[in-house]
Length: 236
Image 1 (cartoon, rainbow, N blue to C red):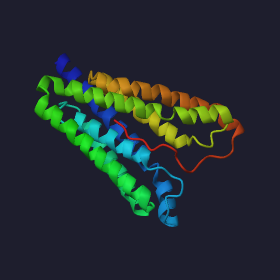
Image 2: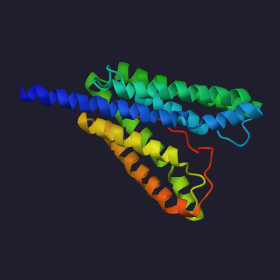
Image 3: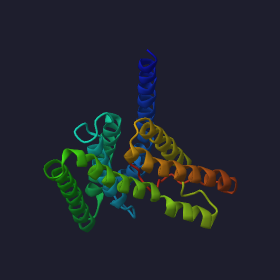
Image 4: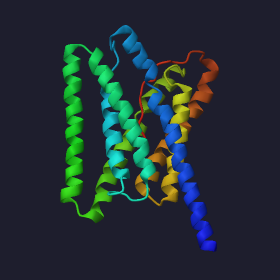
C-alpha cells in the first residue's frame, strides 16, 4: 500500500511538472508573434533574421523524436511540447519565406531542406543503424547538445544588458517563461531519472535566474522594454 501510494504521488508530480512545462513553453512559442505581425503588416522581413527559427525547428524535431515512445518510453510530455513548438517554428519560417526577398527566400528554403534532411538522417540512423539500447543515448545526446546551445544563445543578450546597463533588449516575460519552463522540465527530468532532460534544463534554469536577476537590477534605470524578442525559443 505504501509503495502504491508513493508511485501514485510520484506519477502525479511527474505529470504536473511536465504539463506545467508545456504551458510555460507555450509562452516562448508565441513570443515571436509581434515580430511576425510587423512582417505581415509591412510585407517585408526588414532586418530580421530567419536563422533562429530554422535552428529552433531542428531543435524541436530532435527533442520531439527523443520524446517518442520508440526512443524514450514514458516521457510523452516531452514529445507533445516539441510537436507544438515545431509547428509554430514551421509557421514562422513559412511566413518569413513568403515576405523575404528572392535571395533570402531561396536561402531559407535551402536551410529548411537541410533541416529536414538532417532530421531524416538522425531518424534513419537511430532506427536502422543503432541498436535499440543505444537509440536513447544517441538521440538524447544530440538533444542535450542542441538544447544547451539554445539555452546559451541568450548570453549575447545578457552581454548587451550588462554593457548598456539597459533591459531594452531582454523582454521580462520572455525571460520569465524561459525560467519557468526550464525549472518545470528540470523537475520532470529529475522525477523521471532522465539526465537527457534534467541536465540541459538545469542549465536553462540557471541562465533563466541570471536573466531575471539582471532584469531586476538594471530595470530600475531602464524605462524602455523591447517589443521584439531577439531569440525565439523551443523547449523540452
